[in-house]
Image (cartoon, rainbow, N blue to C red; front, side, top):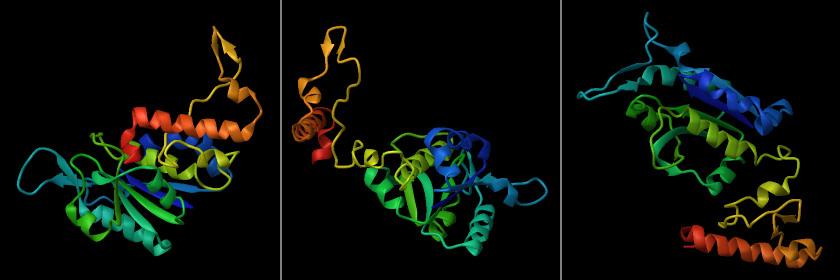
Length: 224
């Protein structure tokens, strides 16, 4: 898989991809992640990528021209399955969305900034808009990192134990059950006996029951 991220702040994005699981995935060549500085496609002598919005109002808007030039250049080099705009208007990111995107080969992620992007960019180039929640960030960079992490960890070979991703929270619309590690007795709080029994069918049933109870209590909306 290849992920191309278009941003005015590439330096804000790079750190998450230089550690832990994402770094290993890149080093193992299971994914390519490329950052494209929108200012490399700027207009005029002042390296302009944003302008005032028509009709007045506070805040600058990313211009269509530089974004068009960047996306067009990328599309001359390869085909893309999706061109994604990180936006609070978009479909809320969930595990199902991440699962679907993990099956793609090449995607572009556009990070908005300031008051967003010229609407014509969204009309002409964007195939999917994704939100990571009902709140506003300074730009789309952190949201793009969240989306990339959610996708990359699902790629075959990225996790040492591939079954781990299949048992994550939300994969079956349930929260994960409680988990424990050593010691079995910590300050009088003991691990449930079933987990020490070695009876794996019963353990699995217990985990399913606990996941359902936790979901009913904390996120009943997932069961609707």
